[in-house]
Length: 197
Image 1 (cartoon, rainbow, N blue to C red):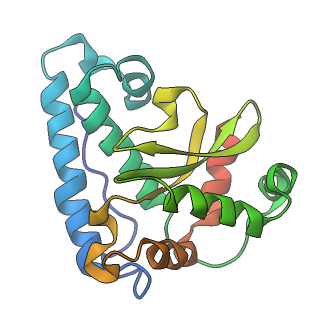
Image 2 (spheres, helix red, strand yellow; image 1 turned 60 degrees about the vertical axis):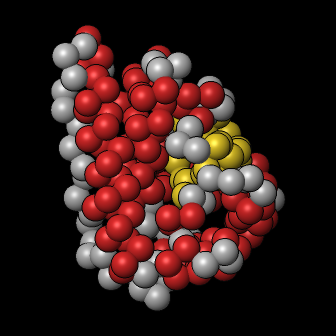
């Protein structure tokens, strides 16, 4: 299996003013493309070519090339899908109920998630996960994700590598995270929640 860089469902400038077009273009066409090609190079000609990306994450993350590049491929593939120019709205149904059950309110979930993103030292991600049927928040370093660590199935993640925000926000990671909440595709995150059960 050769992994392909996923096409976005929107143009690079579609998330303006929250995520700028130049960052989107570099992030997708250079960073994500780089992880994709290096992942393919790492598995080429091996029995790992027949594995899904999730299998690689859960079973072969002890290999640094797969951990770093497979993680970069998977993490960004989720990241793009959980954002949309047709943003707005709120979580609903079972997903909304699960948020209230786990955190008390959507605002409290966002506060805890943003804190996880802000306190991740250096490069990494913050995640909203489904674990044992309920929601939890964690963060990981570099391109690691909770599939590798067994902390759950990620359904929403924010990239806090500097390449995700420095062009627009400079060192103001908190402003980037606050702005990012405005482009969340809650319908897609809800689908991920249902599929993670």
